[in-house]
Image 1 (tube, rainbow, N blue to C red):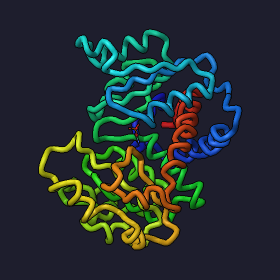
Image 2: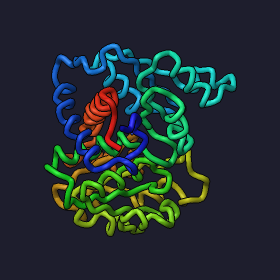
Image 3: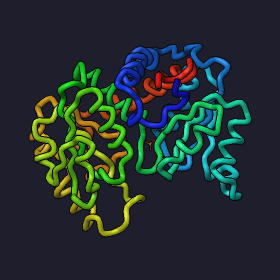
Image 4: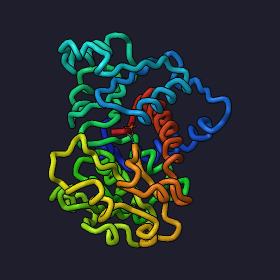
Length: 306
Ligand code: CP
C-alpha cells in the first residue's frame, strides 16, 4: 500500500475514483451544520508550509478538525528553519512528535518525495514547486463531476502560466486517467516545449484553446516564479490571453469557469467572468475541504493500492 499522496502521476484511476467517491460523501458533511466525524480521532495532522497559502492550508486544517484530529500548523517563517535547520531535520522533528499525517508545501519540486521515505507519517503533497498539487486537481475533478456528471469525454481547456503550474500537471495526469480531452494554451514563453508529450493539445491562442470546451480553467500568472521578459506586461497578457465574456463564448454555452485561486482579477479572467453564472470558483473551495477529508481518511485507513 502507498502510505503517501505525492502526486497523481503515479496514482491509478481506481485510487482517484475511490478518493472522489469518498469526497462526494464528505462534501455532504462539509455542507451540513454539524461537521464532525470520528475518522481521525486521536490522530495528529501537521501542516508544514514553506510557501504562502490561504485555501490549501486552511482547508487541510479544517478537514482535520472536522474529522476530530489534533491539527497543528507550522510555517517556515515562524520555525527553526530560520535558524538554519534543514528540511530533513525539520521533518524528522515533526515526525518524532507522533505525527500521523504531514501535509507539506515547498517551493522545491520533489521536496515531499524526499521526505516521504524517511518519516513514518503519511506525507501529503500540498504543492511542490512546479511539480504537482494533487489535492487541487482532485478538488477540481470533484467539482466537474458534480456539475457535469462525469469526466469521461469532456473537453477541458486550461489557459495561463502552464510552465510554472503544478496545478496543470496534476490536472493533466488526473483528467486524462478519467478520460477527458485536455487542451492547454498561453504565450509560447509560458508553455514548456515538451508539453504535447503529456497527451494534451497545445495552442498559443485563447480562442483555439477554449473552442467548444466543457470546462475553461484559468491558471494564475505566477510572477514570483518567473524570470523577467516572458511577456511584456500583465496588461498585454490580458489583451491576448485573458478570458472575458466575449472570449468565453468560444466555449460551450454551459462551460464551467474554474480557477484554483488566488485569482489575479483582470489578468487571467475579467471580473465579470470570475463572478458570472458559469463560475464555480467558490464551489471548488468547498470541494477542497471534502477532498482533503477523503484523502486523509483513506491514508489513515492504510493508504492507496500500489
Ligand atoms: N489553489 C491554491 O493552492 O491556493 P493557495 O495557494 O491559497 O493554497
